[in-house]
Length: 113
Length: 109
Image (cartoon, rainbow over the protein chains, first blue to last red):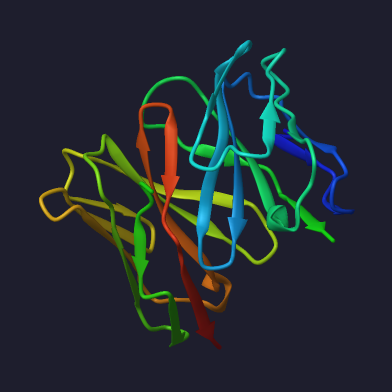
């Protein structure tokens, strides 16, 4: 079972560049989300989706866009990278129903210089 | 922010000792979960406790929940070097999961 797959694992961007972080899951989970993890801050929710065609903002959505055209994929786009977006990004998926665990990808370490 | 907070931020113990970490959260919850994160890896689910439960066990893990105090604790008994990791509590509010700031546990062989 692949679970949740994130690509790339590492990325260095220059300020102002754009890029897309990929996330795919093969568990047919409806709910997917993106988090960023910074030292001392824990994980903060960026955007989430409750199903194909439906997305919503989390705690820290500014500077990021998402779309959900299929159940499997939930890409995160940085439109114009800033040094403040240097972080580790995690994608997670959850199967439908309340009280269920989240499955995480291995993370993407992004550095914006 | 709706994040919880773990306490302590860091904990160092000898192998074989017990480790206790605490989590406080801000809003009413349906359930609370604990996750482990090994260095450089994603989070892995450990245990879930529902709001109508007060205590739950899973192997060497014991979780308690006090909804009146909006707090939970995770006890790892007979710790091993392999338990070295960061531990996070998480609450789910509808479709959104909120994580605490984490406790970094080091178990010294």
